[in-house]
Image 1: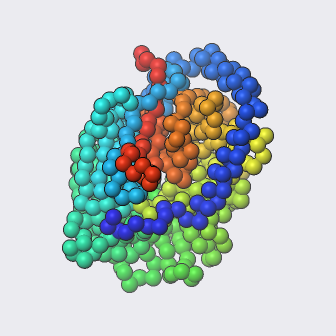
Image 2: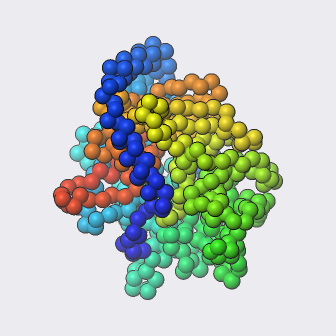
Length: 496
């Protein structure tokens, strides 16, 4: 790999996560005493759902009223049946290196796409029994350096990659090419060389999409492109300045993180940016002493800070009109997972946080008492910073937020035994109504890793849920065996 194999994708938070996962697996030893209760509850739960009549609608995932180049906000409805079946499965064969990095996963109604090493693959959503579900492969000049979490309403995204012939040019590890991809067809729409990006690496390059604009920053420079044409809109390469753009969060707006100074003396500020001009609309200065800042949401603006600790200690909500502070929310009881890794553009990716237009959903830390729910998700009011609703997991079944669904939240509930199914559910925090979308079991050997947001990406889109590992690692005892790359589940019911 051109940028050199990092020792691990994970920071010190992984150590705590390992302990947490070990506790969860110890808890499952007590599951036997509750099997009868679980069976009764499971049967009652399925009867309740089918008698409710909510399974008559079709999935309608259109982003109503969105322009093609807006960042997608699809709305999901219950499928005809919550019973799940595998709709796509792909194994990575012939792993020549022990670990292959797969930093990007995106889905449309037809395709689930994966950025793996130095290519992007698209897999057809249909049946697991298809002899070859690969729809297309897009070779890249070099390894993927940064991926966006964003997809446009018409199914496009952008990635940063290493240039061709980087080793011959003596610039091994440089990440100075950005390209736009149509996820349904695998077509490369345009590709540009980023200006003065000799210090852009896999460790510091971040990319975001918003309102027809692709924005990239790498600490010593920044650039924005028109999403349709690939024309450069603005750039900032003032290497001599003491303050630099670290990265962006996209979506309905563009939020930037600026770092001034280095190491222990560094200070941060957050800026709202006019996407097409790069003009700063307002600034918020983060208090001194903060060691790291993340941008889980641009609109409403929410920042996560590590104050005196390596892990996130607080969320700060800002007024979208002027950047004034609205509220501070302590994360002492929560696990936002903003610091899962330091590679591939993670500034705006907090896997334990989902932000809707008027709620912030945060995953709690794991419970140690086996008689209590594994964990829970709390909904906060961003203006007041107060908790307004809670969604509990179950004993032996943890929950984490996947994405917003209008004003609702789509949640994945994992399972640690063979009786209770895993589930994707929709939660309305105002009514506390839970609607099952899919019920299923993942492959036993892979369930633990696939259900762990620190190891895998979970994507729900247009009635399908996809699980994809961030790293593909071969089994040393069986190095020739294929490794599961992605698996997707959809409804087993017939559509009308």
